[in-house]
Image 1 (spheres, rainbow, N blue to C red):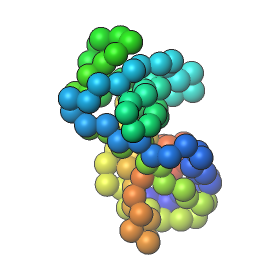
Image 2: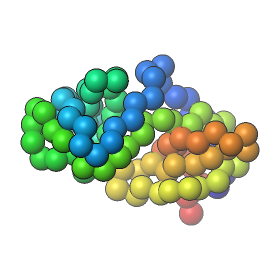
Image 3: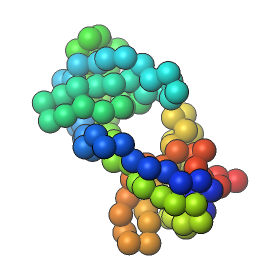
Image 4: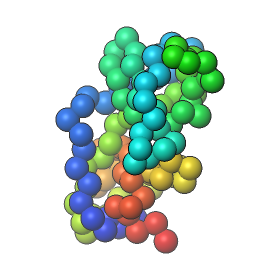
Length: 110
């Protein structure tokens, strides 16, 4: 998969959640409406709300999620490992073996 536009990752550290974790659910993202901000014991990050129970403001994680993003530059070629069309992101791996999420808008997904 070819990268069309640069993707820079946020300065916030990656955050992982696992089934059974309890997290505090914050605001919904205005740019990516599938995502909500969650805060847990080990950090915080944007997570698709479908990975959480419907309880609020404290929810239970129902499926694992890793917020790691992958920095990419236009012209890079990435391996697509998982696609999430509902959220608009794909989990990719670069030539160095590093993995993470890249938004569809930065990728040639066709």
